[in-house]
Image (tube, rainbow, N blue to C red):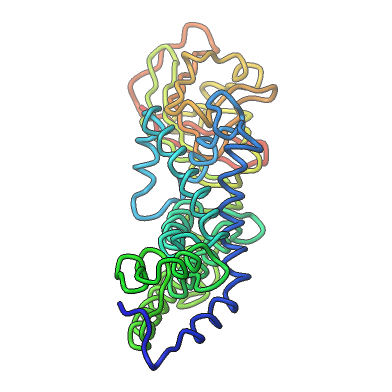
Length: 349
């Protein structure tokens, strides 16, 4: 990269710096705000013993995360040291990159960091938002702003510019131009600008199409709904004495409130009712009978049965209610009812 060319004068770069000032400040404040809330103003978000602990929010996004990231999140949730380090590192990147953009220090590096964070947020949280795609909208906007700041740098009203004034030779250093700020030739700017545009268009439209359609297909609520709850049931086993075991995973739904399971029934192949677990039975289940996979968002007991937030996963063991049951080894069906009248079925045997 070159410091300046006859095609783009130093005045042109100063003009671009003036034009981009508002974007630089807002992008910087968004990321500074995200980091400072955790480290300064709301430290409970970094407290593993607090209900506001960031792992809860991270787990809540797991069902809809793209590109296999849900498996990485699941791994982190089960390894506390790595999880805590990842949350601290993520928060530090937000804090430092935000401050760097506000003051224009190593601006292109800071802008690149915000681009990476925006991509991660879009892939992890982009499906969430019950009234609109709140997380996706924010991430796509900060992605575009970050790429724009990578192109412009901070050629005026910035620490980068002050460094260039005091040490003009830095303008001849490629590393300073790439990492901080500096003039690009018209050819370089056009090439990089078009690459950023192509990437932005592709990533924005592809994720929007995945989450909502309305490009090549009709508008839809997405493969993982942020509106309606869903249960993934598996590994159903019924023992001869009537004990039933199964795995449950709340794999979609709004994160603002949990799902409530109020009744579970066991029926035979003819539809005859064998056993019923009412709220009075469900709320007596112990921790040994609800083996949660993750230590954060958990399936717990409540006044009206089981409380199951989005992303909670557990192995549940239902003790028999009727005395002296002697069930034969044949197929049965488990029917799980929620407070809004929905039912999920699982074949058990």
